Length: 301
Ligand code: NDP
Figure 1 (tube, protein in one colour):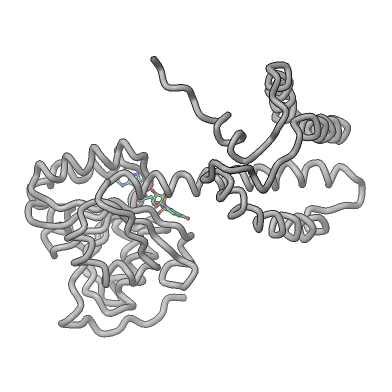
Figure 2 (cartoon, protein in one colour):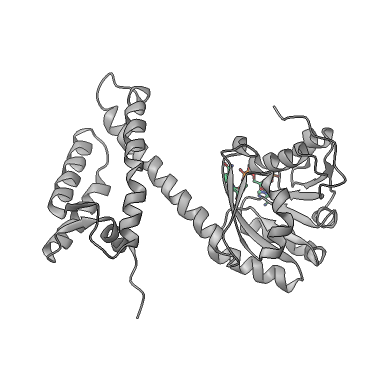
């Protein structure tokens, strides 16, 4: 349940939120609770009703939403949706700041910045590292990048949503970090799903039985991340290293265990094939640096 909003404050700047999906609603709700005058717009206007009951203003159009104040936070399905909504009202962005918290690629951040600057707007790109119920809690953090002046000007307002990490004036860095973290999360969940499929092939083992072991194991392994990161950054001898023979033997075992459990083993088959190639080429050592290097696509000459 939402906290009661503080009375809109004369000292807290007004904010517009475009998009009241699960995330946009949480953002608007947090700003309202913090005492900002919040104007909202959403394609499905009915979603604004509980916010309006608590004091938010529902703008009848995107243009009027943009015109309601100096700062608009957009949180929509994707950048195509965002642009399609903003384009017809683009003139209203002149002299105002647009902060996009819509998830998008670094290229989309660069394109949107160019588009916004050409309109005389100020633009900050952001990435939300939280799920809706974490907004405005200590767990929430957000990446921002782009022009520093508008970020500094609105930092206090943006801080309501979660801890802001400003990553500098290159507008695409926030989305790069955001998508890098999402990639890590996606692969972690893929690992959880795979491990659970393997473990629950044992009759009588449930996912809930197995999950605490996985959590303990992964938590312990997370402690290695900073050590491996230091190895990747260093040109000296690595602190973490295994032989490729050992890593290949483990990958074979993981593939065989998956097959025996009736679970797809294609990830491990690809890993073994790649390690076969490296061993055949004379490589012997598996380190964090070589693991990262092997992921890089060679630049086209
Ligand atoms: P939802 O699917 O709940 O909401 C999508 C929003 O986009 C709604 O406001 C929806 O309007 C609007 N929308 C979709 N299509 C159109 C369209 N054709 N025209 C106009 N409006 C449209 O998504 P979330 O709110 O969860 O996510 C919003 C953004 O936040 C996404 O980019 C997402 O990646 C990002 N995000 C979400 C997180 C999460 O955990 N949910 C976490 C971190 C980032 P309507 O209500 O009318 O359908």
